[in-house]
Amino acid sequence: MWNGNFNSRSPSTVDQQNVTIAGTPIQILFSPEDNAIAQILAYIQSAQTSIHFMAFTFTHDELGAAMLARASAGVEVSDVFETVGSDAQYSEMIPLFCAQVPVRQDGNPQFMHHKVIIIDNEIVVTGSLNFTANADEANNENVVILKNKDIAALYLQEFNRIWSLGRDPDPNKITCK
Image: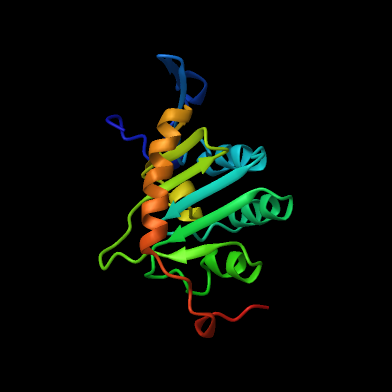
């Protein structure tokens, strides 16, 4: 970035962005150069037991379709969306809700700014990346993916706290096709 290499001009060094610390594999991604959503999709598609996520903004159709596919395959999928914009036309909350995937809207009177996916109670995907095409293709964002059950348990505690404060979407505000 110091050399003016922003966005699509940024060279990817994704093959050098892995480290293991105290037995925990960690992968770092940057968008747009590392195609972060495509890499996250691989983790979603390999989920065997559960996917829990908290999203400030989630409008990425392919990521939403992958969540639906895993739910249809019997994987437990549950989601908390920031209330503002969650029932808007392009929000992925709508197709998930309509498919009867457990979703909630955040109950916090302020913004819930989390961008977290917890997979199989072991893999945590987090960072600044909103789950949108714009964040993946145009913004300068970061993603940290780590595999550690103890760290995942801490994120699950936060997910459960946010879930308990949330509320079910109003079905009168959502039109299912």
